[in-house]
Amino acid sequence: MGAVSLEILRLGPEEILTVLKSLEINIVQILCSSFLVIFVATVYFMSKPRSIYLVDYACYKPPVTCRVPFATFMEHSRLNLSDAPKSVDFQMRILERSGLGEETCLPPAIHYIPPQPTMAAARDEAELVIFSAIDSLLKKTGIKPKDIDILIVNCSLFSPTPSLSAMVINKYKMRSNIKSFNLSGMGCSAGLISIDLARDLLQVHPNSYALVVSTEIITPNYYQGNNRAMLLPNCLFRMGGAAILLSNRRREKTRAKYRLVHVVRTHKGADDKAYKCVFEEEDAEGKVGISLQKDLMVIAGESLKSNITTIGPLVLPASEQLLFLFMLIGRKIINPKWKPYIPNFKQAFEHFCIHAGGRAVIDELQKNLQLSAEHVEASRMTLHRFGNTSSSSLWYELSYIEAKGRMKKGDRIWQIAFGSGFKCNSAVWKCNRTIKTPTEGPWFDCIDRYPVHIPEIVKM
Image (cartoon, rainbow, N blue to C red; front, side):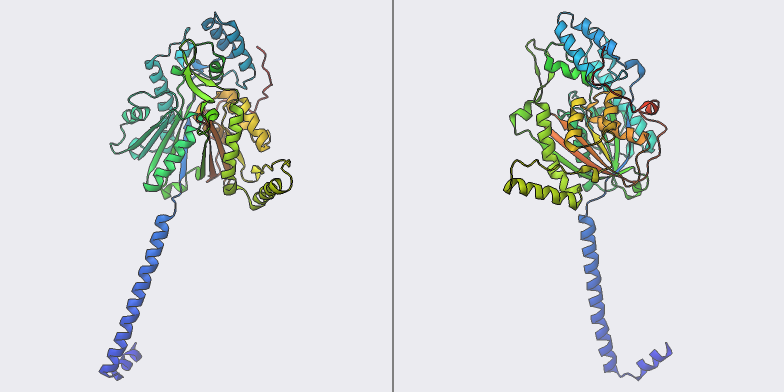
């Protein structure tokens, strides 16, 4: 320090001015460079997509009083359709081959003879299912209702006024500035549409929580006519619902179960056959029901192919993508009769959650994607234990995998759902941490009994 002082004293006034001017230029350069670095870093972090975490979720478990064994279902069918024995026989054949078990549940109003699908009964079912799932989720996460910034409720066929989302806000006294959405008419794939909407909203609203509720209310939609295409849903659809908590808060990264990687949506509504293959309408007697057409599985297969074409490049390893490309070029140039190459999605995912829409849906996807019995085990067991719970079925399947202790850190999960319109939607998740076997949930009291053997035909 002393040497520096002596050197300054030796300098003349002009030399000192020259040194100060050079330092001033350097300071300006340093400030400009620092500002540029800060600006570029700010732009990068502002434009970078926020990570979306699945903090936790909860599935509704119906009480034993709502269970509908095969014998009970068929007895009620005979009494309700006493003048249509062929319709009763048709339902019995469907139920025998459905893949459902003896413990699936229907809401109380459907247990009456004849069923009592009143508005009050439908609201009672909605409150029971939705509030039970949300209560369980809030208890698991410790989140208070006023902490929730975004609310999305999807229910395809029951859309009252006020909406189901308003019902939730009223029950839990949520904030007046909450961003709420109510999705209806979007079928069994609406759950992943809700996840996609929540993701988009969380990208523009930092430090937020999003609550997604997926369910289907059975009470007002139980068909009481004789049209076979409309009787089919009666045999498959059952009570169910799920509540999912998403967040973009960085502090949730450590406790969150999963991170959302991709959502891919495919819509075939431009095609008339696809649009009408799942259609709500009146039958010849004026009774409203959901009609399922015979070409439903063909349309579902086409929708899946379109969805795979989009999601494949995002998730498949380079080797699989090259094989697919070479086979595609070969079919175009060398021999069009070559069988199309089906990518090995088992290299991209450890777990598959296929919408438990019915035995035929699971069979078709297992065949098309060349999956093993273990890969579709969660879907088959969910169908057996809970039936087709519509948009919430994917969460019962994920809960099954967790209950079996199979979910490890880094595992990748592919959720696939189909819905009216016609839609095929996919979501890809990555496990954030090894999931411990839960001590509660829909599978807690029965997971040790699964998997079970499901015969091709269950004779009644």
